[in-house]
Length: 232
Image (cartoon, rainbow, N blue to C red; front, side, top):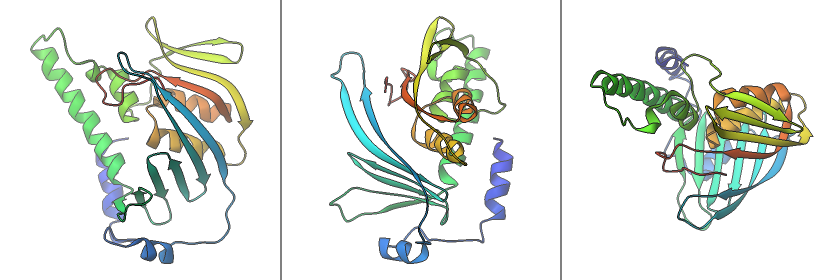
């Protein structure tokens, strides 16, 4: 995903404003199509493990429809709205609604990837031995969910219904089991959800789309430099 292409796409559609950032929830509901829609709905039980801290268990219900992704989590709700090209977030019981353009997150991640690539080259130029781990190609691509050029840095090792993705000697992603097969374009919807809401590397997302089945378990090792470093 090139920064120049992303900017061009944003400019091309800038005039097509489907919802404004200061709209209330009532205005959003009135503007959004509300006809019945088929959707894939599943529950996610997550356990975050960090060294020196107690495990943190969370639950969320994910709804993947053709025009939106809705995540109902313990700590709040998020709607990635394709029809209005906005992401909405709110917390039950609080009278606030956060709204941002659907271009905001992809743009940030693309430019942040470029920033980290430049910083890595600078540190290599100064021969810095202990460069931050987040600057390593795999870790930045995993944390940000984007690659400049599609590549497969991980080695796959399959044992039964379990697939390990290894970075060197370390298993950084493990995919186990198959809950249900995907239908229609559900695989595309799932990998979009994974891109927006997890730190799953693009290589693994591509494989999951080809496998076309909802995995039973995903184990992800996040970068130690990430504020969300965890094993969900």
